[in-house]
Amino acid sequence: MAKKKKSIVYPVVFMFALALLLTLALAFLNEVTAPVVEFNQDIELKKKILNVFDILPSDADATTIDKVFKDNVVSEDYDGKNLYIYKSGEETFAYAVPINGPGLWGSISGYIGVTNDLTKTTGLEFIKQDETPGLGGRITEDAYKNQFRGLDISNYTDKNIVINRPASGGNIDAISGATQTSTFVVNMINEDLDEFIKKGVK
Image (cartoon, rainbow, N blue to C red):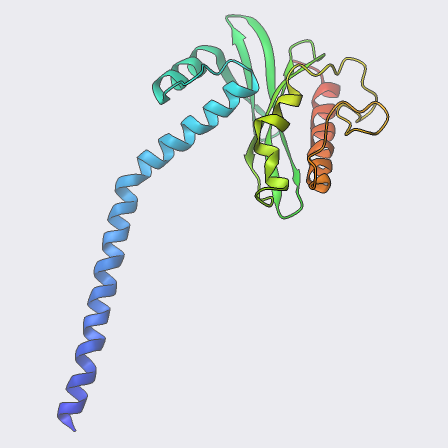
């Protein structure tokens, strides 16, 4: 009976020791890689903001992206979020306005760029989205985002900055097979950019 009890205790102690060892190893790995992960996330965000302003150098490495960002972009608090400003000295060229709202499968957030005179968009990027790959997830493709480059918004009416075709006044093509996601994107841009424009540039 004592022999049977010993055979049960051994594997329990072994599994406990193994679990402890693996936990410590994972904690150490997380501690070591955390700065690298944080740096990569920071560079990815800077890359997207530069793309919103259409000043992202082609084939730029992390060092170049970081330098171009620091030389041209500053951030300010905007209702608890970051508003990015493209400027040189005292001259401001454009703003990257935060946008967010519901998607079909989760929340969507990103930035829409607008010129300093608030008459044209400069670009669009998404920071977070959980839409279906190959369908709603195609909002992250250049073919869709590039439609928001140089879009004339000088004569928009209340919350009708971006309109999906074929509606009257349409200026953007929705993604085929993902009209709901396209509508969600248009709605959040219209709401958040309209609010920014109406608040006025400080």
